[in-house]
Length: 191
Ligand SMILES: Cc1cc2nc3c(=O)[nH]c(=O)nc-3n(C[C@H](O)[C@H](O)[C@H](O)COP(=O)(O)O)c2cc1C
Image 1 (cartoon, rainbow, N blue to C red):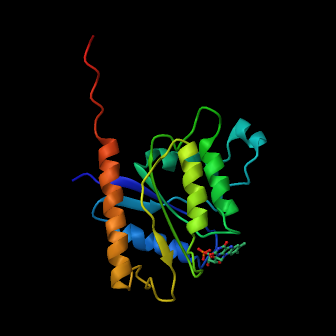
Image 2 (tube, rainbow, N blue to C red):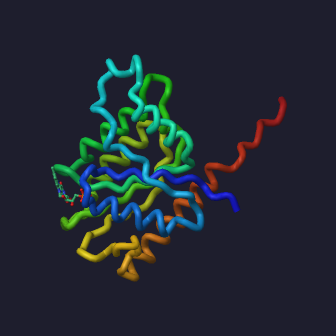
């Protein structure tokens, strides 16, 4: 069976990011349905329209990886009750130059983890609004993952059974939606 391509985007540029750990764990849970890999965003320059005249190599690479993906899974922390700047910067680069939006029509899913009580819920809501505006098809449902030390082990396995089952169902839902959206469009009958 051909696997879908899944781009994992982590909304943190921190070396020990708990969201990167969660993204790696999700990539592992997705392995039988998706070819999953992290799409790097921490090497993108701060968006500046002046740079569009000669796109930096990191931007060209980033946009090519987006365009090759069937679906994008965002795994993000919450910064000041919103989207981290590093992630918003990547989103903006993906939409540019004008007319070359690399996100349009792709399936998106959103999750994230923090140690806080609301576990990234506000950031996720903000992110969903932005993703809809840039033309992505955003999967419904909610996945706010409260982080505890040891939740993801050194081999990126989720150690808590109920969290693992929840995340597996989330990935299965994403695979089903990606399959539906990737189905061939039936041409209109001639008038
Ligand atoms: C600038 C900044 C703002 C933050 N704001 C929030 C917040 O609004 N809500 C929250 O739950 N955690 C907040 N945190 C804590 C993060 O959830 C925590 O640092 C988490 O580990 C970040 O995820 P990461 O390890 O993937 O980078 C904030 C952290 C930083 C550095």
